[in-house]
Amino acid sequence: MYTGLQHLHSGLAYLVLLALIIIVIYALIGSLSNKQFTDKDRKIALIGFILAHLQLTVGLILYFVSPLGFEMLKSGSAMSDSAVRLTAVEHPLVNIIAIVIITIGYSKAKKGTIPRARFRSIYMMYAIGLVLLLSRIPWTAWLG
Image (cartoon, rainbow, N blue to C red; front, side, top):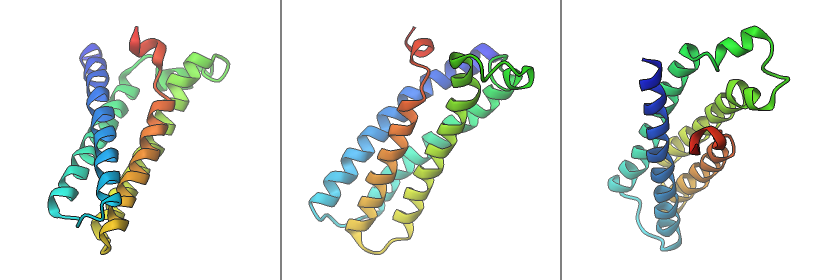
């Protein structure tokens, strides 16, 4: 189960990052071209929203079943080793913050009335979330 969750979490990460990049560019173009914000635009943003939340759910499950996550915090050795600290503390905390920011961006766009502001909410908040996600990926473990 643990190995399957690891593979799902890694594979889904590629989809999340790709979707967020595409959505940020799409919303930026929509804002700059003064396009009307339609239901299609909201659904495109919803794809990134759902993928990010699915990734968070898988990550949280993995965190509690992994010997590298919550167990390292209980042992007390997480803060002295930077690689363990990244996996046990920084990666989950920053990614939760990133997904909260993505959620705020989607919610503001959904409730907004001015098309340009709705696009701006998506591209700004999703881009901030994307940068935060990219900053805390354990690149050495992820790429090999």
